Amino acid sequence: MPPIAVDTGPLVALCDRNDSAFASCREVLRRTPSIVPLTTTLAAVTEAMYLLEDVHGGAENLFDLLIGNRIRLDETPVSVLPRCRELMARYADLPMDFADATVVELAERIGADTVFSLDERDFRVYQPRHVRHFRLIPADL
Image (cartoon, rainbow, N blue to C red):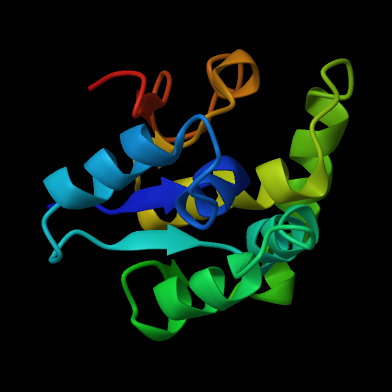
């Protein structure tokens, strides 16, 4: 089964029961077989940790997702930074942030045509090298 790249939004939603997307993101986890790699980047985790600062237990919940290996943390090599810079320049009008650039680059590198993201506005615009467009979950379920 093909891997799935994970953006910041679901990381936050999965760790905050009060988030409006909590239930739909939990449903994605429930429906996704554990053999399907759900993979994210350190930039997305860093952004999620920042957004979870004021959520009681939020950071601990995120650590649990990562330590439990339900969502894998990619070891992004420095060699991908030129591609991230290229993506951010291409989508400067949105603007594309660094976390999104790393998620798009990750999807390209691991061959993921699906991105677990709540950011439909941007991820429907991004055009990765390896597919015409991303399938977005939970939106496209």
